[in-house]
Structure formats: C-alpha cells, structure tokens
Amino acid sequence: MPGKAHHLHNGGPAPTFRLCDLPAELESEVLDHVAHLARAELNAAARTCRSWYERLTPNLYASIEISKANRRAVFAGLGLDFLSAPDLESRVNEAGSEHAPSNGAAAYAPLEAPPKLAALAHTRRILLRDSPAAVALAEALLTHPTLSGALDELTMAAPLFRSLVSTGMAAFGRPRSGAGFLGETLVARLRPKALRIEYPPPRVTSSASIFDPVMLARVLAVLVSEWQPERVDFIGVGTDMPPVLGQLTRVFCLGCSSAKRDERVWGDDAGCSAHGGLVRWHLRRLFGPGAREDLIEAIEEGADPTDDDDIHPDAVPYAAAAKVQYLNVPCLAALDRDRFLLDTFKSWPAECDIEGRIEFFP
Ligand SMILES: [Zn+2]
Image (tube, rainbow, N blue to C red):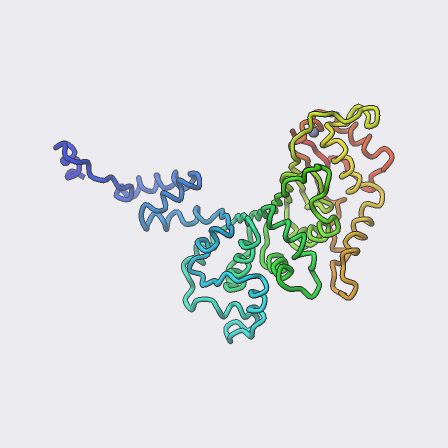
C-alpha cells in the first residue's frame, strides 16, 4: 500500500491500521491465532469487523456461560419471552400450530430462522450459572426444536444443582409442574458427554449435609442413567459424597484439614481429618456390603406411591461398573493405596472387584 507508506514518511498523523485490511493469507494466519485467545480477547477481536465476527463465531460460541444476567444477550433474536418454568410448561401444553403439532412453544418461534440459531449450533460446552439460565435454555430448546442438545460438557453451577435437588428433578416421573418440568426438559433435550456439578460451599458445621440424601440419590440416578455421561465431575465436595457414579467419576474435594485422623482408631493410613473418614465412608457406601440395595431403597423411599412410572431399580447405575477418582486429597495420595483400601474394606468387604478402579490424586 504505497499511499499509506508515503503518508507515514511525511510525518502526518498515522492512518488507522485495520487488521481486516491485511492481505487475505496474512489475515487468515492472524485469525488462526486469534481464534485460540482467551475469552475477553476473542470477544474484542470479534467486534473488529463483520467478516471477523463471522469467522470467529464458531470459537465465540463453542463454550458459553449462561446466567440470569446475560441470558437475554445469549439468546437475543430467538424470540424468547424468558418465561418462568410454570408459564413455559403451560405454553408447551398449548395446542401447537400445524407446523408444531406436539409442542406449543414451537409456535412462538420467529417465522424466519434467526442467525443466532446457526451460531448456537457451534456450542459444545455450556455452563448454567443459575435456574433462570436453565429455564431460558429450556425455552430456547422447546421454541427451536432444531437446536441440538448434544454437548461435550455441561456444567451445573451450585445454585442450579441445589434447586434441582431440592425441587425439580426429585419430582421426576410424578405429575410434575414448574421446576419438575424444567428438570425433565433438560434431561430429555440435552445430551452432554461430560457432566460437571458444582457443590455449594459447606455449611458452618462442616459435617452438616447440604442436600437431602434421598433427593440427591434420585437426581443423580436420573442424570446418570438418562445421559450416561462418560465422565461426571463433582466440584468442591466436603460432605454429601455422590451416592451414584458415572462411568468415570472425579470427586474434587475441598482442601485438607491440618489435623490428622486419630491413628489409634483409624490405623496408620488414615489421611487428614477432613478426608480420611469421608472417603472411607464413601467407598464403603459405594462398594461395601448391601451398598446397592441401600441405594435402591433410598431412591424408592423418595418415590410417590401413586406413581407407577418412577425410576426403575434396573435403571439405577451400578457403582460396580464405575471408576472413581478423588482429587485434591494429598493426604490420601501420599498413602500406600492398597493398604488404605485393605483397611477400608477389612470389616466391610467390597461386593465387587475394585481392583484398579479407585485412585487418589493430590
Ligand atoms: Zn486431606
């Protein structure tokens, strides 16, 4: 560009350099680099010009975070009304149009497919921050049945998971409304290969449980059996160890306690006072005598006796087929694992072969 070069030589004001003025090959190389930048830089780059926005759209939408605060921006153009869960349920049950005979919400879609739909088709990972985010996603999926629910990873942040356990999905299989409807919609329409569940922070008395154990077991049984995720991560676990495992389950524990477990009671390989007992108890509940019967009993305890269509015992995932890894447990990772497991199952023999299926990581 001789004109620009000349201009600079004259010492006048430098012309604005625009990346999209680069030769195509160079621009393409820059974009390849930009596409792998962090979120904030990617957002800024996408605002450079229209062609950059289009080129970076797959990267921009590959991983999205949805919250009450940003849901209108994320789903802009999809014609959503951001209904409450009960209102969304009523809409779905309205008589559909001739184009959408089975789902009333689909009749509310804009006549022309919005460009945002194509952008969201690139999404492989979703983080749902809260319940309003989950309801908005449910409304998007129901309004636009072409929107795929196949994901590489779904993260449920603590407020959402807590509300699903305390209200919604516990009603799975029952005449349901509101939050129960939300849980069923997510379960039916999403297909994540990996599931990440963030736990709420522990209560003041750290051993107090956060979830109703029956409801926790029911919700996890539904999620794992319906989605069959390759991996389930539980983040920030200090109590309420997951009673149901995915094929590979990673339990990210809260940090170690400075106090060691009483070795006179617990033996030499005991770990710290936060992890030693918690993990031992968890392993026995998963693999020890009567573990599966106890789990099924707990799940049935939460069922509505008038409901014939509750979770079937055969559908409850088998711990005996799963691998479990505990992370953020340096106190256990430092031990002789075989000896720790031997002590764990000494008086509570495992009912299945646990060889190579339990691991500890610092
Ligand atoms: Zn520890």
